[in-house]
Image (tube, rainbow, N blue to C red; front, side, top):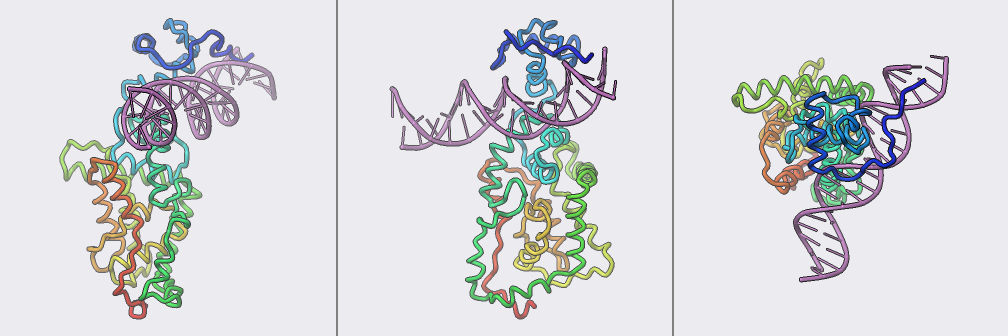
Length: 310
DNA sequence: AAATGTGGCAACCGCCTGCTA
DNA sequence: TTAGCAGGCGGTTGCCACATT
């Protein structure tokens, strides 16, 4: 009935692994392959629990593990996947070749989570924290009166709201489908970038922000879609702010709202452009953070006349 | 130079799921 | 069918290195 216990915990060593133990484990697995963790410690001459051996191998000794700092693209990918999967570190790791769930989990808790908090984004919900936004500055703006602000919903094309809602529903009800789309897009864009930049950039380095491209490209397919606002940075900001109301962050907030040179009829186009900007490299944490902090800028210029706008 | 604080990360713990006898 | 285990997983802990006082 059942299996025998994987190991007798009594008398087994715990704590950090020594180089000698590592060597024994590596040599054994090179000869016999991973698996059968229950018998492995005994056969390899290790005073360890099989579970400990498995963890040591999968999290540290495996030859295909990528060591070193996470790239900006990897970080984007983690944030995007976390917004869909939550704390499913193994599922996230499965989409980041060479990274372990433990490593991603640690990196999330020590770096990304803190950065999002500093940006005023709730790392659990991926939405802005209301206690972070300085709403008073909005209401104190000399050009802004409250009645105009309340009428702002007229700016938003109902079809856009429908699209936003559709995306939200697909994200919450069918995350697997969304993941599939993300991966398809990752592959597609990886190839495109590779074609344009040469063969030295691996596909798995492609920015997850490019998923935005795919979503935005779908917009013209909406029947009777007619963008009803001209494009300026502030209009984008306000639209973005309203547009994302029921959406989780990554599709909107992690894009660069400050993009202002977009073509005339497309808020989405400007977001596309911004996604390319995301492909740049950042050599320091400060640069990354500075760049990311731009996501949260909602500036209302003095010159904005809401009466004309409406 | 010593004490204390903080961050990063490897490793452990305990629960859950699926498999096996 | 079911008891019981292996393996997988997420959360937590504890150690170490570095920074600050």
